[in-house]
Image (cartoon, rainbow, N blue to C red):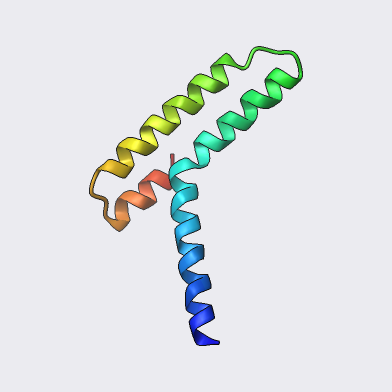
Length: 75
C-alpha cells in the first residue's frame, strides 16, 4: 500500500511541474479555439500560446532551483 501512495505522490508532483510549464499555453490555446468557434479571430490567442510555449521551452532548458519554479508559477 505504501508503494502505491509513493507512486501517486510522484505522479502528482510531475503533473504539477508540467502544468506550471505549460499551463499558460493550454489556457491560450483554449481561448483561441473558443474565439474561433464563436466566429471571431483567434490569431492573438494563438500567438500568445506560441509565446508561452517558447517561454516554457526556455525555462525547461535552463537549470532551475526551487525558487525559479515559484517565480514561473507567479507569471
